[in-house]
Image (cartoon, rainbow, N blue to C red; front, side):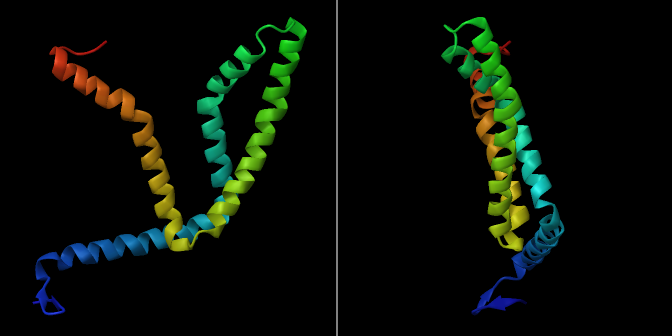
Length: 142
């Protein structure tokens, strides 16, 4: 019988041991991730720019809609060639510094929390609204 402060915790000792293995494993992965933080941050920034690049391009297109064709082309080329490149380099550098400031035991856990949180945020409007419309109409949405 395992007791902590006089309370029997024998029923959850296996769970506690598994959680300790998870914390040790995440710390081990954090040590393995540490030398590659600049590449990881560059990949994250490049993926985000790839995903949201069309939104940025659409916003720029609406801002320069009344300009001459040559001006619009030059602005588009400047934004795509220099703007995205500079944003990738500088944001990746800042993200690498931020990740490097984290303790190694929190590095892998924060990366997992970021990925899961971003996935939940991206899918909130689509996945759950389809389920709600299925229950309200009784048929699958198109």
